[in-house]
Length: 213
Ligand code: E4P
Image (cartoon, rainbow, N blue to C red; front, side):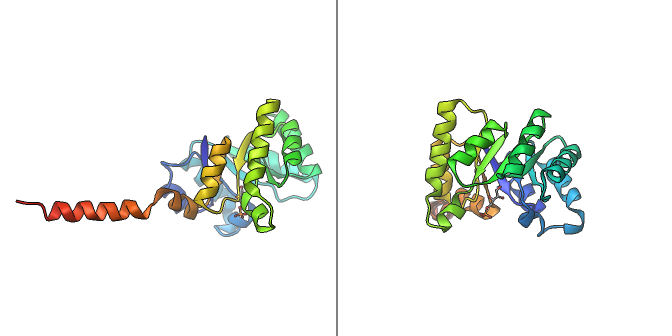
């Protein structure tokens, strides 16, 4: 199972590089960092991680998305072209996949969308847990449904749990059998730390300091 960091913050990627395989970005994330030279930021990220770095197209039409996707893929062999789960996005996904370019179909909110992305050869499908929870639906059941359908049907597309809001989402998505999960540095920190670890460490240190000499 792969862990991706959902950020374009180079310092955070460097800090957590031993725990992560790759990185996912989106236009909102990239717009926060080095906007004038975002290609440079993407290349720096590729050098820090060993697996895919997802970068999303921002074009509106299939023709422009295709051109943009091919250009992004040329930047570095770790780039995974992120495409929206729309009619145009999926058509472009099929073409890029046939050309051997890695693809990540994003903004997936239903199992049927995930099936169609798999039919178009997507490398990853990114169902959004948190944004579904925000509108009163169950993001984790969607993850469970997609994992089960992909298993039953033998689809090779990797399920990449996205829009993760807490460590409970992380555990449950992994238990459903996702192939990958992406999370912000803040969520990764919360997965790593536990108050009882800190309290226990402090107690051990105090007992050691006060040991009989
Ligand atoms: C996934 O690749 C997206 O970048 C991300 O997980 C979106 O999460 P959000 O709903 O917290 O913006």
